[in-house]
Length: 273
Image 1 (cartoon, rainbow, N blue to C red):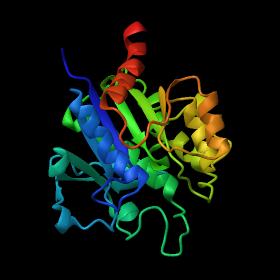
Image 2: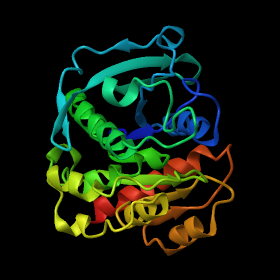
Image 3: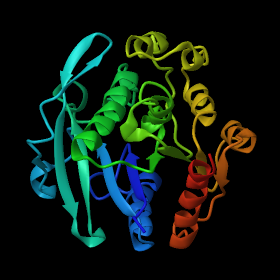
């Protein structure tokens, strides 16, 4: 039987960034899935604060060179890769000087969210999808960690829905007690429209706060995982109201079999369809 392919994307991954609930889970989840016989790939942004020499990042020339248009502007896509020997896995990095050269992750030195975080997220998600296409690797499930990755569900259900490379691909999103305080650009829906999104998705974009984006994508994902033990009452309500497959919080040392079975359960819909 062919191994199921799970694509993990995260806004941060340890050891490339400091330990956090998201970065540690983004490293642990692929390991757990791999231990249960799944084939995995992992991606994150190549922020300027990542030490390329220390972590031995190198560019993958055959995957780089494509331009992606965001809000009618072209940006070159650069792909890098590094190994996490202790986890027996590689991590691919989405890079672009305009979006990721700055020495911070999602906020500036004063703790203010970057005004272009919506475009950075768009570039990251599209960059991941275009890269796995070049790799010739078709994911069965895309598992997203952190709000920076949330709109992957919109791409899979929207502009990439008719792409045969992602036929049947499911999206699972992990909910964390992590958010941004400043609304995304009010032109966010307009930017997506430029990329070819249709009204069935665009009409739902009325609130560009973190809660608004989370509520929006909760109706487009195929699975939700409660990744934090405690979240805000608003996030809890989004989780409780979702009609997709759900996996409650199980702690850092979540059972590998439980996670693997959850992916299988999400994929059952493809088999039954």
